[in-house]
Image: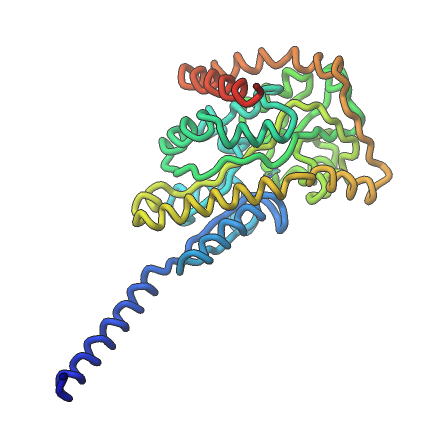
Length: 341
Ligand code: 6CS
């Protein structure tokens, strides 16, 4: 039996142990910062909030999310992540292309399939996406967590376009990567790279005559108000990527690294469901909101005229990226072939 003194000592020790354990678990409960490029309820925001939900439901950590503009433009949030001020960032290859030239592969027109199931299967299975890209991002101090599609690219212009000749003399805004500029040059237009924050105003003042984006974004950003002719060219998908500062990630215990990977997998599955039907819903909202909007879906023959310009862009991609780009492109094509079978 314990005497009074021993019992008092034991109670003292266990109180101390509990207090120390409590302090340790509080000390291990970090508040991580995550920035993305979109607004409330947009695809990147849904991904970020699902990621947060998983982290917070399965650990003591918390996640603070910053939306477009709260910490600057896309390039600013990438710089802050590389500097370790932010732990996570979601940046689309449309902007990462200047940092990681190989990420521009998504802007070779007509490379990606057009139907959603094949695109999703590709993101799940592709070696290029799941093994090669993480190495390329790691070279820039970034731990690539997930690449995912947001929606099919649709062009909006000041008048309907059905051929490369119709694009002549039109300034089309592109995200700031040189390969996307080559694509619009090949399509017959005058590419005009701009950060997102300048796009609406530039369309409104006719500084530019068009731009490309997925339909949900054309709706949520109100782009149809100032650029009402929607053209479905079927030339690509808007892809994006969530990543962590690699020094931060590598410094975490294994269980936290697993937590982050599981959270990214969870958010990916949720986003796949979220984008299913999203474009159709957004188009219906646009058509309800404006009677100025026109919808042009290019037929096979019209698509062929644009497709015929794609090999030139592929060559430019290889010129820009060298052997590493060539290997990535070969792998990309092999992965696509495998899912298209
Ligand atoms: O066009 C852009 O710049 C923006 N588009 C989308 C769909 N997401 C973020 C990006 O900044």
